[in-house]
Image (cartoon, rainbow, N blue to C red):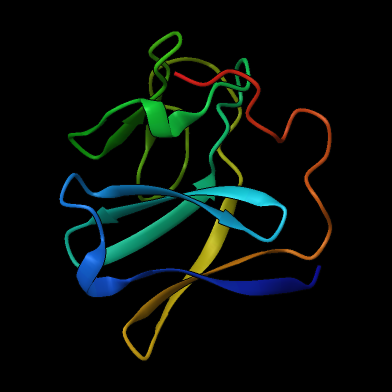
Length: 117
């Protein structure tokens, strides 16, 4: 599968709360900083398509604002429920810019957040 790269933020301007939701091509990406590392996922809970960016990042997990499902920041694996893991995207830093690599194909049904907080 090919991916396309998109600049989402200057590294120096990344939000202090450690998360950013940004458009990357046709995808809505949730970028999370854990220490000095960045992780990116589709900003869509695998339970009922809520935008995860409306939830909290705490103790190494991303919490869905709708039903409280928790996903591990470093892997996207569900640790607070029995839902599928989050769709992950590649992240790189280039000349001080955070870039996210998303699939060249648009998101399918169930891969777009339909419920936002």
